[in-house]
Amino acid sequence: MKGYKPFTCKFCKISFDTLDRFRCHVNRHKIKYIQCNEISADNGYNEQTPFQCKNCDKYFLSASNLVLHFRIHKKVKPFQCEYCQKCFSQEEDLKLHARIHYQCEYCQKCFSTPSVLKSHIHTHTIKDKHFHCEYCKKYLSSKGSLKVHIRTHTNEKPFQCEHCQKCFSAKNVLLNHVRSTHTKEKPYQCTYCKKCFSASGYMRLHMRFHTKEKPYRCEYCQKCFPSTGSLKTHINTHTKEKTFQCDYCQKNCVTKAALASHMNVHLEVKVKPFECEYCQKCFAQPHQLKCHVRTHTKEKPYQCEHCEMRFALARTLRDHLTTHSTEKPFHCEYCKKCFSRKKYLKNHIRTHGKEKPYRCEHCPKCYYTNYDLKVHMNTHTLERKYECEYCDKYFLTKGSLKAHMQVHTKVNQFQCEYCPKCFSRKDSLKIHIRSHTGERPYQCEHCEKRFTTWGNMNTHTKIHST
Image 1 (cartoon, rainbow, N blue to C red):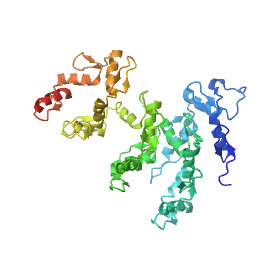
Image 2 (cartoon, rainbow, N blue to C red):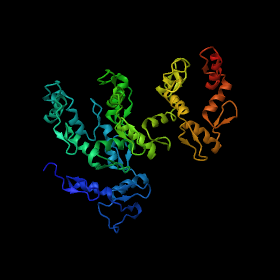
Image 3 (cartoon, one colour):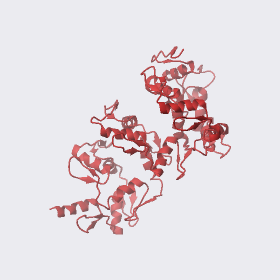
Image 4 (tube, rainbow, N blue to C red):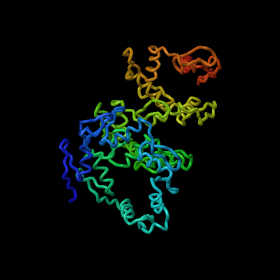
């Protein structure tokens, strides 16, 4: 019977339609753990008892999963790829890796076996597409695919959620909605960490952060990505294609999320339905809330592959990775200075002209970058949120706190290449080196005089204003 869910959890009263889903859910309420070194035939455990690893305190639903996980600590990798001889500790990781060897030549999508790839290729070849869409002349390989595709034209949504009456065009989309919004059921668990997911696709994408697999390659620059979505967004940087258009001002955006964020500009009351449970701050997009919550929980899921540093945001990790690379492909056309990222070059170029697009709403001051404006805004709000762990002093910026910390650690790690003098801060060394090279990068906008520091130039500028 449709909608009949005979299996009810005694802990949280959520019901399920199958016994397998019910058992998987109940296991998350179990509190009895057996450590890795206690596993034996005399323990008396059953399949529903979670197990804990003594090395990293991760939990697993079965002894077999724990044994597989323990190979990570022992560095045992018995599963080898037959194509590139790369080894893995778990068979699932090998299957995930194998996808990079079976890649579709038409859409760059990857598959775990040659037979699945062969079936997929039929969806691209016209001779195998016998089902024709009457709306857009598109051909599809099966009657079921055609039926689902036609709903994109008719806006038919036959699958209705029994909890909120929201409708969907496909059954799997409805199932993902119910799990993520109502039942909070997450039956798919990552074998590396305890994180669970409502859909197998989300879990596979997450696992690539552990395996470092990036099976989707850009045809323009050969850069690789972990998902088709991130690849499509990246390709737009080459094609300059902006497919999402605003209904109010016809502005085009690269992604759907960027369009949703832009739409708030036209609303009299900014719609921010996503509220933080810690500080009640509201956000327009769920991913913005997710990133913000990490400032409270201190969660840092993104780890650098070169060092032990971890980061809360993927873009922060990308910025950090440039510190490990000596490559600086972006050159300034005015002074030949090189940068590792395009945005750094863009901010630098503004120092050659008079463009200061970031204006303070409290005073007439303008700045080259948004970060400089935020630092300046703290002088009006006097918000000092960065605290020293040694002396309880508070600072306006993270950089000020980092510079202050050198007082406690007494570390002078930056040495001048021209003389034996050492400095605790990299920017102090940079300014000092100018005394050897004679570099004066800051020029007065009223006269031709140049200075080694921005502060000296700013002091000099006041002469012209009096």
